[in-house]
Length: 296
View 1 (cartoon, one colour):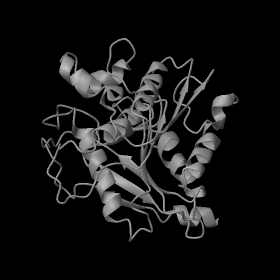
View 2 (cartoon, one colour):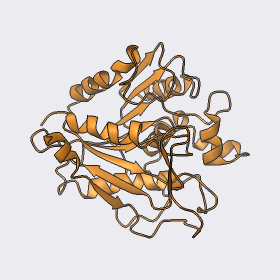
View 3 (cartoon, one colour):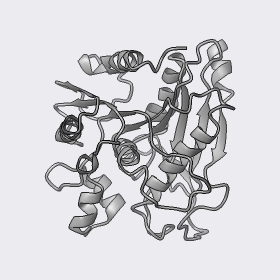
View 4 (tube, helix red, strand yellow):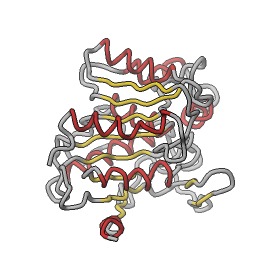
């Protein structure tokens, strides 16, 4: 009951306060909840963050911006959103679930950068409010599942790219990233085609494909990462995570990659799974603990 009470104190914040960058007004475009195949939010026009504060008696000062997956087509806001927020709260971590815009030419001047704009501003909002929210401004990470993992890795590798006019110089750089069966590459050999087409269209240039293939964008300033993938992932090949981990190794950046034999794709916290992939939350907790992120 106490946990439920704490969780109910979450608050929703309009990221852009009504002034969405690159917006094309479209009165026919309405956000919906679609459960025809898997429960998801679609047609997001007003991106928000929902802040779930860590319980006061457990607060470690760490915060994580959570990016649900969904192929840049929808947001899997339960299994890769609210349930993840509850888990993070149990660890003493403030969870910030990001409802980012899904790329669409109908409401965006440049759909390829819209999710990145939302991700950068979400990071800046959390950092600006760190003191007020009981957060250490140097312990703010980003987490993403599937296409949300692409967004999280994009923010991690493009955090200083100027994709909108920020009102101040607050950094959008995550201090760490948690990438769960992430889309990383736009390379036709290993990409998730649905995510690629949603984000970049049917005929992207070689330059834009490289730009959003995030293993190619890793450099010395990329934050440390914890990664999870399954060998039998039929949606997002495991090579996505392997390429990112090897790029991190090349630049001497701390990275831990767990590759599981089975699990497929889209298992969230793995609560319904019986294989070894269901143990990844404990491995992630231990990684965060070792890195000093769970110290009160």
